[in-house]
Image (cartoon, rainbow, N blue to C red; front, side, top):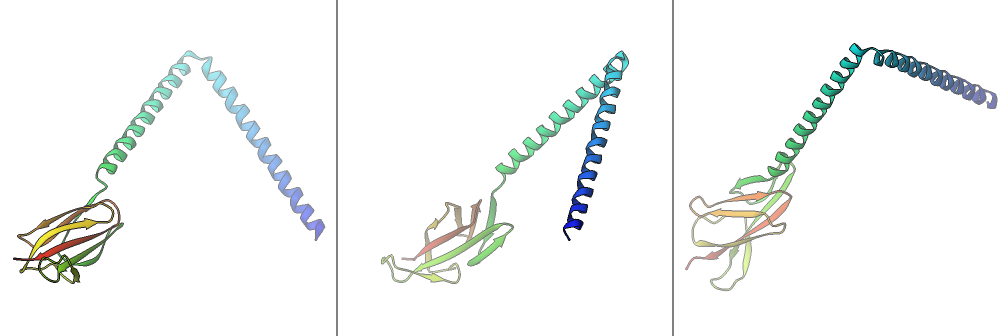
Length: 161
């Protein structure tokens, strides 16, 4: 068993040595070729032109990637127009809308409701845990939320007087 392992080690070392020799030979040939080319004025022009084109393409690609990431960060928010209550999953956003209705007039005591009330209540305000922006449309009895991370928003309604 020990002899087999030694044979395997020997083969690996030999293969690695062959690889190193091949790599050295390749680089020596490449070096000779480049040295010959740089002694020729025509080839020098071609290499300078090639280097300029490669530099320009690299700068162009870097500029495009930078511009894309700038606009991507700017538009990384999502608007949720929703009249339903509960959990909502859009792309990578986890959003929960909770509606609380006042139990008795002027008490400030609220209970959870399964839906946004259509009549008998007035909008009091909202609170979002991660500072999302919520707008309430009284005409449509709906909410529009702008968020850039997962959030839970509570909307409060008081009994109409």
